[in-house]
Length: 295
Image (cartoon, rainbow, N blue to C red):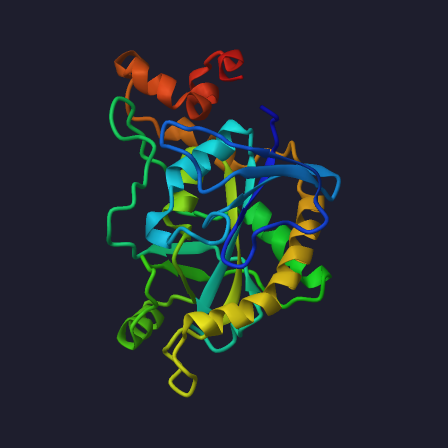
C-alpha cells in the first residue's frame, strides 16, 4: 500500500482536489470498519496526497453516522503525518462573514450522543493531551495560503462542534456565543482528538457559509442556503489547499508526532497483546514495534 505523509479530509462541498494527477483509489480496511469512502491518492503541488471525502461519495453519511475512527486509522495506515480537514461552518460573530476562512485553534465538544471518541478502550489505556487541539504549524500554513490566493483569513477561533444533522436552535446559538464560541460545525469532534491519539498533526480549514441563526436580521440557516454559499467558497478553498500543500515540510516533526510519549497509562507488561496488534499502526513508534509487520 502506497505511503503518503499528507492527507486532506474533504467536508461538505469538497469531493475532489484541484489539478490532482496520477490518481489511485484505495480501499483501506481497519479494525473499526471501512472509512467513509475510497481514499484517492494523487499528486498535487509536487507531493503525494491522500484525499478522503468525509461524508462519502455523493454526501451519503450524516455527521452523527460518520466512521470517525476508521477514517483516521485508515489515514494512519497510509502513513499520514499531516491532515488538513475542511469544514463548512456557521459563524457566531459578526466579523467572521460568509466566505471567510478560519483556522480555529480551539474546540468545544458539544456532541452529546454516542460517537466513539477514542482508539484506547481497554487493554491499552491512554489519556491524550488536547489542550491545544489544532496544529499551530498547519494553521499558519493554511492562513498564509488563503491570503496568498486572495481569500480572507482569520488565524484563530473557538470551534463549537454539535451533533447535527439538525442546525442549532436560536437559543442554543445565543448560548454558544455567550460561551465565547466563534464557529459552529458538526464534525471536528472527535476527529481532531482521534488524530492526536494517532500522532497525526491536524488542523481545520473552516469556511463560513452562514451566520447560524443568532443574527435575527438574517434568515435562519437552511440547507439550501448553505449549499449556495458552499459553491462560492469551494473555489477559494481548493486554491488555498494547493498552496498550503506546497508549503508543508513532509519531514518536519511537531508535538503531535510524539503525543503518546506522555499519554500511555498502562505499563508495557500489562498491555493486552491483542489490543497492541489491533492498534499496531498507532503504537509502532511509541512501543518500538517492528514496522515491517505493518506493510
